[in-house]
Length: 153
Image: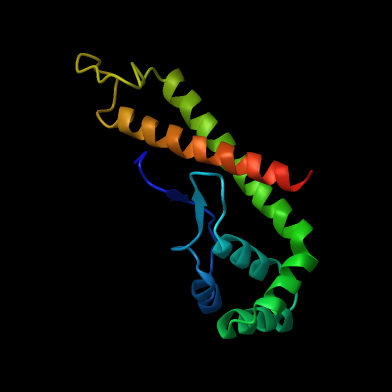
């Protein structure tokens, strides 16, 4: 829906822990329409990147007790790695959406994104809706990319 304020960041963790759920995975991990990124995205990615269980537990404890200074220290220390994971994830999603659009076009499934063509027997009835959704998500991802690019300057 184009009127939504955000879209899920679509980051998938195969075996998320209880702590990851408490950090916001996946229900609070958003990319916002203005290109912003929810704190939960940064927190979950950082937690996943921390090398030792002791570091993970210390970060998680800081989160659960509201110790913002400790959390910020971890974020500052690991920012380059967290940033790289997030940037790669956004690039991957944009690439996947581009590939999906090409596949739909190549298979002659899209007659028109803006118009439904009932006479087109090759077109899936929900394809215009799916295509509009993908375009909306891609637009948000482009804004997130710009936001991330601005962080490296």
